[in-house]
Length: 245
Figure 1 (cartoon, rainbow, N blue to C red):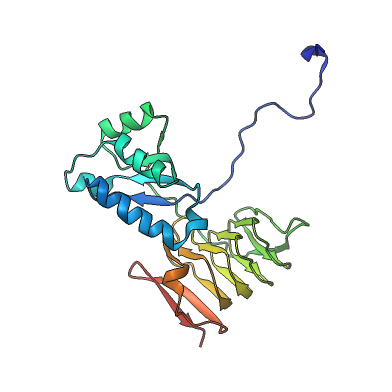
Figure 2 (tube, rainbow, N blue to C red):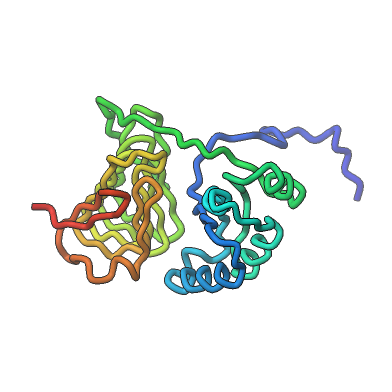
């Protein structure tokens, strides 16, 4: 059957750029020892295999170049792919490394971080039926229903969850995160570099917690206080987990 494309009408354009936000792990490379890199990478993946499974990563070569070590992008990408990860970007590299990345079809990204100011007078809204709402810069997002596995919620301000966050779910906020139920899944606060952001929850059982790019995975969190309201904040580039007094 032959279809005349000229007679077909579409209610939406065939191609459209959309502004959105995804969290992508940054893998800092500080050695030219590929065997060591592979070993350490596999050890880290074993701690949280579901989180890293088929994950995109950005390779950061600032440290390795500060040490004036020579390493080829292609070799590092091969190690990354062998571990089941996908290099989608490179930053902090030399001109040669950036050129190698482009030849491999990998983006070259900027090193700068965008600082976001928290809203002074946030407007509280309730998420729609799909329990996910991306708000504007003056909005705090309020979630009233449980967040299930596979769901992903982003807030440009604070994020307040009045129910539990399930395993496999991901919540992100440029400001603070408040979870008034059990926090499983992944919670990332201050995602635009706000180091003053905090995470508050009633029961911490998360797969990953992060503030301004500094994170801990489940094995690092084990031993932390559970079944007790806690707060998580950043102090001297380390995450601190403490009960709420």
